[in-house]
Image (tube, rainbow, N blue to C red; front, side, top):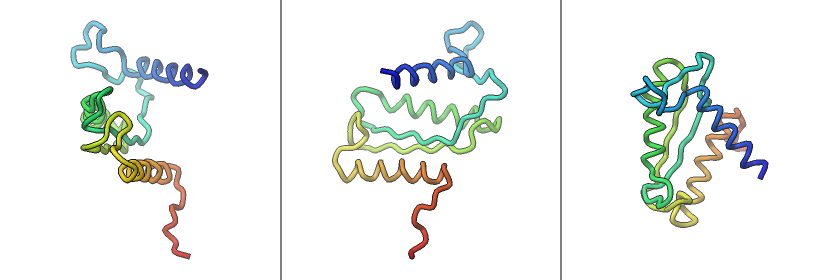
Length: 121
């Protein structure tokens, strides 16, 4: 339960930085309000056939970061991968799941600056 509470409080921090779209005078949706806010390198993964969370949410977030945050130097790296099959888990079978996790771990390794076994010793 602590993990859920921590995740929830982190998402509330995003509202402090971006604002709520329901606020008066914010017709264009969320906009960056905190000048010190900067999006970390991020990878979004989703599935076209997700029956619980529509992939449009991830698409809109990526578009917003690219169109609004990148021109202000607030989002350096925004990556997106959408599997055309699968469901809520992002993959239809083990091969697709392995591919998705390979993308995820490669992104993480690159973000952390780890050697991903490029030396063939």
